[in-house]
Image 1 (tube, rainbow, N blue to C red):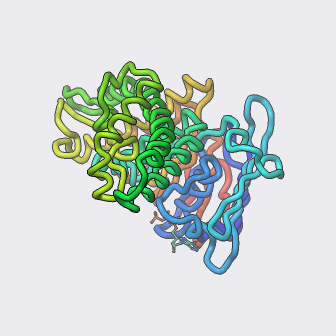
Image 2: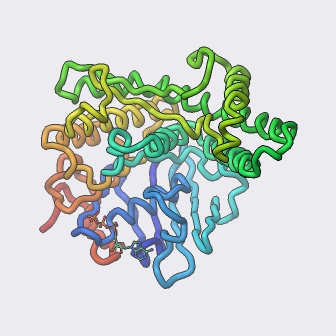
Image 3: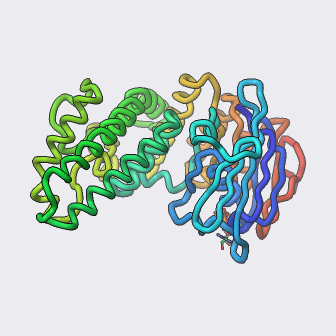
Length: 379
Ligand SMILES: Nc1ncnc2c1ncn2[C@@H]1O[C@H](COP(=O)(O)OP(=O)(O)OP(=O)(O)O)[C@@H](O)[C@H]1O
């Protein structure tokens, strides 16, 4: 997969950007607050239809304008394909080769992207919400149908919660029908997350072992809470039955509280170092290495599953890592041959990822200017 051309119009502070990225590294350099992350976010949004930073869709549209448009021309398995996404009025519309996309699967069609941002540390430091959304981005990358499936689950959950808020007067048979839908959709989410973690965790553990500078092993795990039975081996109908049973058991409490307390929306990811919670015990540097281990595992896993590397977006990551781990990452990127977009306030930090054909961009007040293709940044 390769991005051949990118066009951005009225996305955040970027009025108009048109560029032909390098097959290897494209590096956007600029001072703080100029639009570097916005450029990566436009690309991430194009490839996933999800904002990179949490928030409302309307935040993506440049102030004073009605809609934003991002278009990318990709080379996928030897054929060229253009996808675009338009955001306006709080909704988004996806297009394939200029026509409305018939389905999300059709739209994604093999396009895949992995982003590294300073916010990724939330997977260690943040709460379960941040960890779930981190996990789900990886699940979606590996199984694009997950976007539709997780929406089905969210819809079923919203309906059930609405009923629960109506309280004990709700007819049991009515609620049972909702539980059935929720349990089936929930079982699919469990199975997708479990499949992703089974592939990813061993790779992430191995990468961490080579960059963590500690003999303590890392573990990355996903264990649904309040779910009986043997989660590791249960098939989907068994998972659905187990979830239905848990929903039943907690019904009285859920009716009192007005929301559903069990299901994939309440799960967490655990990251440990030397058998202890990484959040509580790992140092800052170790926490960063744990995240880096996950991300590199994600890239390798996608390459193994799809036969090609995803597009990589790195937002100001070099300033977050210590020199040794930064050098590791840069040489990994250069060796991997992946197509990479990096942002930085200081070009010298990412020079290790730059090849002869690196495209250097300068970003200032929403203007993105190509400074040419060269092996090192011009002054
Ligand atoms: N919808 C919008 N319309 C116009 N401008 C916006 C919009 N959303 C954000 N901005 C502006 O975009 C700028 C931030 O851009 P961005 O986050 O890309 O900065 P950056 O170059 O990555 O900076 P840093 O190095 O600090 O991370 C801010 O000036 C912000 O006010």
